[in-house]
Length: 496
Image 1 (cartoon, rainbow, N blue to C red):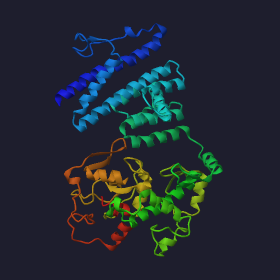
Image 2 (tube, rainbow, N blue to C red):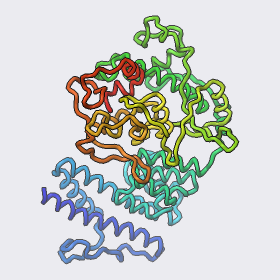
Image 3 (cartoon, one colour):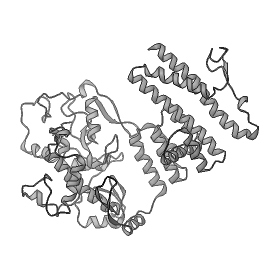
Image 4 (cartoon, helix red, strand yellow):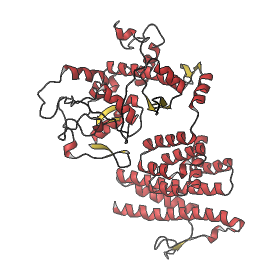
């Protein structure tokens, strides 16, 4: 193992030393113009004893030597344990991506056209037009801010994050990749979190006229029918964001009811009668057909089965109150700014719920000391978190998570400051890996290993404890049972 590691690092030094020299040579070529001579650029003494004569001096490796060196690197990695092997591959990929971005950036600096730049990128192998454009934009961001090359090489910024910044550059005239505040936030977050930060930066930078965008969407609204390449009949509805969100929310809510009726988390997904996509289809068709399809849900003639025409979507909108008491700046959580005329229409038939925040954006209320979050608390979390705090999944798919588990020895309370929205995948990962979620000094959600006092006990009966520690023999009240049934994000998930 140690011998293989030494081979990897020695080979890597040769390979990357050559790549650095190639990148430098590329820059020198554009500075020196026609007088540049490849033979005049060399790398000396990068690896003691390396090179043909073992003198410590060697020139640039030619193509065949680079191939041989890289093959040695790959062969050496192949004999490592999986974890260090994958970690080392990730490191090499970052270094190589940074080298590529720097070389292509130098090519752009020389005056190369976008087409010529994409042609250069295509030399990296079979890449789609979309991939070529993406890598060219990535190089453009490095050209705009050379420090991003080092960020990519050392892992401070991932390829995904650099691509998001590069895309934002095209929408902000290059402002995104040069904004120190945004870059610090991107370096401190994971790609899912930073994607939303970059989007917000673009929105704030451009300050689009939301009313105009909404009017354009309304003017171009349409529904079309077609056949997919798989031979499936399909209907495509295109329209304004507010209307599509309302339709999607109705369908998503109904599909969630069908999921629980099919067995929910109490039954393995492989044993469900329908897939998630099939449930969404059944939920969608219920709103447009008078006769429900088999297995579509409430087929017993109950009120629930006949309420599809009267149900209204729940859309949570945040607004500010100006000095005159007027509601301004409506924002639909999960989708962004809302046109004022759409917000005015919502107000005609809406339930108004007030939530007061302090200066740090923390909702100022606490619950009674019960395990499950109340509907009011959940609405407050949606207003504060607006989605999964780790991966930014939509709030409609999120569950309420206790930062300090309610049934742990630390006895975490069901208070707003001990709760956060997380999606099912992140929720399970937090508990399975015994991680504690917290808000750091930069107001960014992150995790740390949980202390023994913060780990909830495992229950052999397969259900959650619904009482405080020391009261395990007391049954849950009918009220709490009803609440758990209604709010499946607390009961069915069987998590704190």
